[in-house]
Image 1 (tube, rainbow, N blue to C red):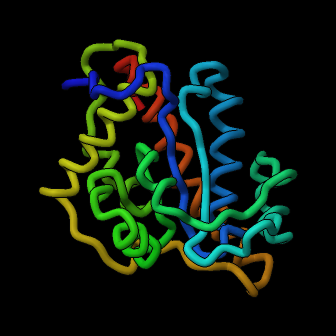
Image 2 (spheres, helix red, strand yellow; image 1 turned 60 degrees about the vertical axis):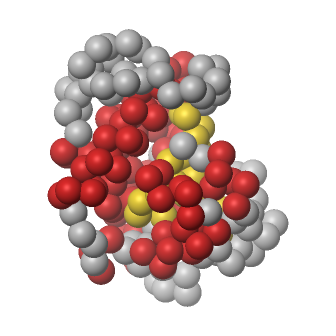
Length: 207
């Protein structure tokens, strides 16, 4: 499979997470993913950059306190996080946009229709990743191979999958902390295996 995509080889592979307020789900995914990549892969994990934004962001706010507590329990760090409003420029520069619900995915595609092949819900990608085999050439170039992985995800979606309510991770805002915990665990269960696949895809190892 082709891994040369005309992108600056020194540019990190960028994942953009999108939810509504950029207070709970998307910052938890961003910060948890960063902690996991740094701990599990060190310098290699640095080839993947994680960002987040909200379709109706509470711009400048920190993480919701309950989601921040859940994030710490999962091994991430909420300090210094600042909510951002989603902009088309963010979508256009992202190599992979992961929406936390189908509604967020629709909003992303309204803003940047040409990003279709790079835009999924998180739960959608978690399932599709099972259809993508380990990369055959073992090039070790994490960013380039991660982009090839996204192309394989798009191909798998076109022939293997529809969509439905099961693609949505619920919004915990205003809910009890137990709901924030359930949401955090759902994000962790979907995201961490995906990040492992993105890194190990570059060396052809099994997930």
